[in-house]
Amino acid sequence: MRFHISALALLAITVLAPAQTPQPVGSSPAETPITLTQAEQLALKNNPRITAAHLVALASAQQTREQRSAELPQINADLTAVKAEDATRIGAGTLNPSTLYTHAGAGGTLSQLITDFGHTHNLILNAKLREKAQQQSALATEQDILLATDQAFYRLLDAQSLLNVAKATVQTRTDVLNLTQALTKSNLKSTLDLNIAAADLSQAQLLQLDTENSVASARAVLAALLATPDSNYRAAEDSESISPPPALTDALIVEAHAQRPDLAAAGFQTQADQKFARAQQEQRLPSISAAAIGGVTPVRPDGVFTQNWYAAAGVNLSLPLFTGFRISAETKEAHLREEADEKRQEDLSNSISRDVRVAALAAQTAYQRIGVTQNFEKETTQALNLAHTRYQLGLSSIVELSQAQLQSTQASVDAVNARFDYFLSLRSLAYARGLLAP
Image 1 (cartoon, one colour):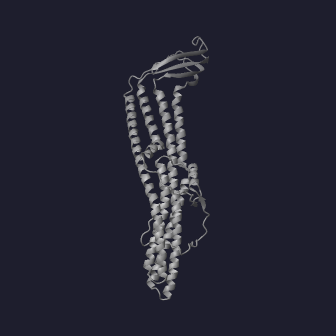
Image 2 (image 1 turned 90 degrees about the vertical axis):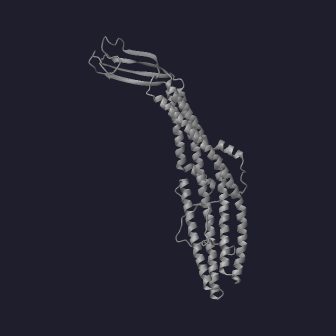
Image 3 (image 1 turned 120 degrees about the vertical axis):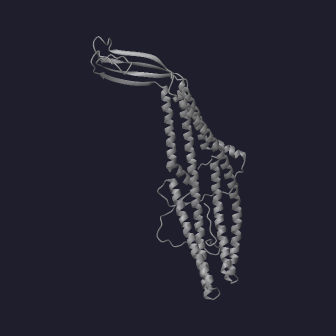
């Protein structure tokens, strides 16, 4: 967000000259004023990244229902008709009863898991924890968009203020050029002074073009974050009081670890990996389920089907004896992924501690810069007034006036940057602490 002006391009403003807006080439669309709060609310409402994150969280909730379905009864309906060469037999390929008869029947089957000794239960817990992780990730996405919106808003606000400085600089340089032309005609100043004043005016006009481009660029970035067709926003500054930032203490870091949604998401993901690893290991245990079947056979051969209905029920125990080392490989993979996520969580925790410290120190420095730049601006304004008076009286050259204008412009730019840098540093600190909200 900070603007730097080289020694040749730095142009000053003076309190002696009123600001003048250059004549526009053509009509421009009306500007839409917007405050920081309005921008944040629009971003939360319209930004597609936020919508996508919430949709992913809703999708993860359905995965929990998918896993829980294994504990509920499974009911299927069947309708079968067979045309066969009666009394022939199947000779290969199956162990089922092999006698074939022409028949037609309708019925259903019911199966119910009794227990698999924790395998399904841990898969359900895994899905629930992943769902919570996605919800926290959606919240983290919201805070990412809020911070990006704040950055774009303050960049636009800063560029607008600097554009005002540039416009005033053009007017000031125009006045100096007019004064120099008059003094040159009176043989009180040389042609060199006139050439320098004209060159300074051209540089001021270039500075205005650069700042106009910065305003347009900042508007485009802000409009993209707000996902609105209107891109001709004008940032309106809220009445924010400048109060000291919070001091850097261990409490800030502890608070950040408790509030950051991305760290919470990483924690839930690690817990989900633990449940999944346990579920993979429990595949070695037996699975006990109940089954029932029943139906009618209205079409059947006489003397073979003694009843026109059938029914049966039973209990089945399944125990994997050898799976080609699949279970052990899946268990090992799950444990390795769990360890990897634990390390990622640890790295994120360290990064959060660093971010809080850096953001707090940056906020303190930005707060101190406000006072320094205000004094700098006041001192350079007084120096500019004296230099302007001396130049009008012929007591100094245009070089002295240009130098005073150079410092005054630098002071004005620094004062604008310092103010908005501080506001943005406070929002960055709130983000690092996990407290960023509209």
